[in-house]
Amino acid sequence: MIDQQVSLRGGAARLPVRPRTGRFLVLAAVFICAACGLVYELELVALASYLIGDSVTQASVVLSVMVFAMGIGSLLAKRLRCHAAVGFGLIEAALALIGGSSALVLYASFAWLGESRHALVGFSLAIGVLIGAEIPLLMTLIQRVDRQDAGGAVADLFAADYVGALVGGLAFPFLLLPMLGQLTGALFTGVVNAAAGGALILWVFRRDLSSRCRWLLVLVNVSVIAVLGTATVLVDDFERAARRAVYGDQVRVAVQTGVQELVLTGADRDSLDLYLDGRLRVSARDEYRYHEALVHPAMNGPRARVLILGGGDGLAAREVLRYPDVRSVTVVELDPAVTRLARTDPALSGLNGHAYRDPRLTAVAADAFTWLRADRARYDVVISDLPDPGITASTKLYSAEFYGLIAQALAPDGRFAVHAGPMGGRPETYWTVEASVRAAGLTTRPYRITGRYAGFAASPDRVGGEGHGPEDWGFVLAGPGEVPQLALAAGGPALRSLGSRELREGARAADAARLPGRTPSTLVHPRYWEDV
Image 1 (cartoon, rainbow, N blue to C red):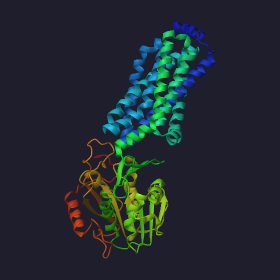
Image 2: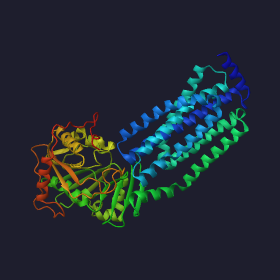
Image 3: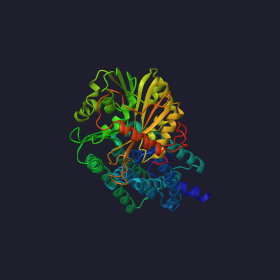
Image 4: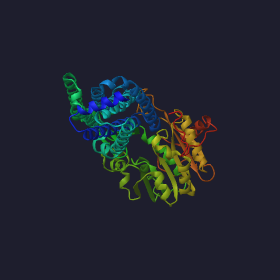
């Protein structure tokens, strides 16, 4: 302890600033580096959730691997304590390069290799090791600056670290993501990280460095900043190339809204594909099969007032509006950009039959769960046209509580139809949806329809490549009374793909594939990632 105190006094005398100023600068660097580290972490979670899906699993993987790696990094940093200044400078440069480029590499592996899971684990491990190595070295540096006991130094360091993490955690969703996007935001963070770490060492601790080490740190930091800066300039070209690799050469619209990434491909309505967060949601090749099967069995009965949850593309509304006795249609869509595109894009508006021009249709931009809790109207038909239940963000919209709200919104003789995922490809998910609907007090009639386009609609992470998507759609028709009749309305519009024979076959296939004993999914115990 006596030797340590002598060393601290000697170290403070070599600094070009007063101890109080030096201590402030070290803590400021801790603050900035902590903010950058949390941005890297959140960026990995957000991008992995978009590319792979199931945000709960991706967050668990990133956080657990990173925390484990931080422990490894702390142990490895013990060997660098005698060269704390140059060691910290090199670690921050490496962290800036790896963290700043992580989003680019992760997206590139998804776009060109079709697999991003291994890259996710690799970056989580590398970033965690580097972040874990920071604190032991910073502890050594702050004691070189000021004559402070170890307990006080640890308290100051962790206070600056936690406050920096708070700022980084808030800056990511509210500043970096909306203003710069994921790729540019990560690159910008890397530049800030390299500049902060390099400036601290090359200014405050320059007298602790040999001439060779100073020039090494200058060269390394300038190179890192140059690489990240060049990548920032070229990021738009990279995004266009990556989108072509993922979606093909006919990308017409690519928009990052406040809710999701929205991409339209295809030159006209006959070749149109709509992707939401990388998942194929609508294909002109087969969308009529899906929407006819979803909508028309529910329209067999009173249908004056219709509620569509989701379906901002207007395609379900197109089918509903084919019935002249429908008086009002309410479409509740979370992302107003989807409905705006459905109104204005020539191909999509042509495909939905210009549904939004019909005066009977009203569009509401709201979360379906929240909107249903406040709405007191009753509807003859409720249609749930939402993202697949295997996507964690939509899990609450497939819960027993959500279906309870729908049951309250239904008229006594009303009908409810929901797409429950592919019955053949994800049977556990499908029958969990059916059990959740029954748990809300509704009686159900399951059915399936085949003829689905086998693109990569099952998951954006194209592990199996094209041609390995699900081959059917599974639906559940439900009502508050007796088991609803699975039939088409007498005198209804002529349909392209759906008839009484297809419905009978779909019902028989569902009965033969039934999985009994499924437990309903609830808000506090979601059950939709068992077979995703």
